Amino acid sequence: VPGWVHDRMLPPGGWRLAPAPLMAALAEALDGFDGAAVPALVLVPHRQLRTMNSQLRDIAAPGAATESVEVRMHPSVVADLGLGADDTSGPVTVTVTSAHGSVAGVLHADDRLHPEAVVVAHGWADPNVGALTSAADDVDPLTGMPRLGGVPVEVRPAGAG
Image (cartoon, rainbow, N blue to C red; front, top):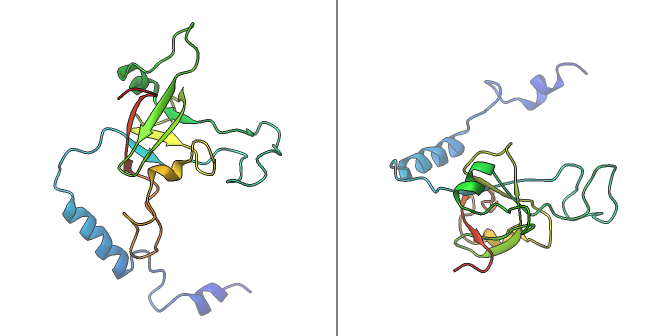
């Protein structure tokens, strides 16, 4: 029935796009940002197209992957860090490290990414992006969700100290 959302679901005054608890959390986050240096690389959330988390990985839709695409970064950063593969060496394995742990994976350059973004697809056992996050630290107090994006990371060739 037209109008039911407005009549029954919206509180007086309409949609609350910025409720007080959310605005207080935003103000607190901004107060903590003093213009200090932003991390050079950050983990960003990522899902693979035509892949549903950890379910049905061995059953692929046309064009879908049945294995992880590993670690993706912008080509300019790959070059700046000297991580690119030449024609004879094959794929480059890198280690992505955060304050919570490390994962290793094959590096892929992707010019669709922001230069500060490091992508490790969620939902795979290897590399397990959960090793880079924490269920105890950096948990959102409003939702109880762990921080999955904006996590500062470093990327090095696998085996490098």
